[in-house]
Structures are given as C-alpha cells and as structure tokens.
Length: 126
Image (cartoon, rainbow, N blue to C red; front, side, top):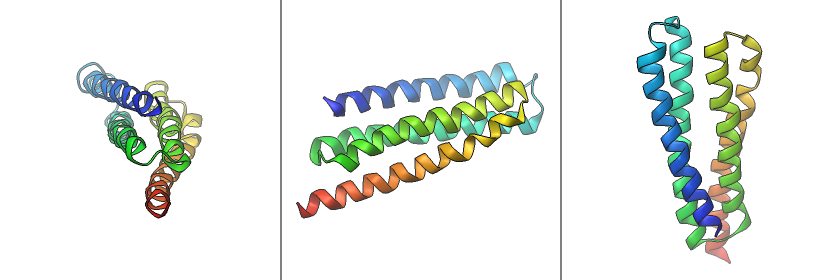
C-alpha cells in the first residue's frame, strides 16, 4: 500500500509543479521582479524533481520494502512542502523570513536521497 501512496503523492506533486510553473510563466511574469520569478521557478523545478523522486520511491518500495526506502518518500514529501512551499511564499509575498525555511527543506531532500540509497543497499544485503 505504501508504494501506491508514494506513487499518488508523486503524481499529485507533479501536477502541482506543472500548474505552478504555468502560473509563474503566465500570471506572475508581469507581477514579480525577475529575481522573485526565478525564486518561484526554482520552487516548481525542485518540486518536479522530487515528484519524480517519489515515483522512484514507489517503484523501489515494491522491490525493496525496507524502512529507509519508505523514509525517503516521507522525506521527499516534507522537503517539498518546506523547500518549494517556502520559495513560493517568499516570491509571492516578498517576506524574506520564508527564506529561512528553505534550507531545512533542502536538508530533507538530501536526507531523502541518502535514505533511498541506504535502503536499496540494505535490501540487497538482506
């Protein structure tokens, strides 16, 4: 069941990333300064990368159903909320305080990739 959860989360996250990218390209292009538009686009780009990562986790969970693989999925979800979410809020509101949250999301992304690798390696030796 966890593989379906991560597959659905990945698909929904990809949907939001595409919608955010379109929103940025069409609705925000004339409303935001170029540097804030670039921040918004970074949020959408990293959200798409990690939506695809969630699909990879879903597949990996069917082959190697170990704790670190499952943890990777939750880390990607949390990382997306903090990283991409804070960049969306920063760019739209201009409130720089949201930028303090972004590195926490980045750390969760890194931990997710590390957890996925550990899980795959751990499962191969079990």
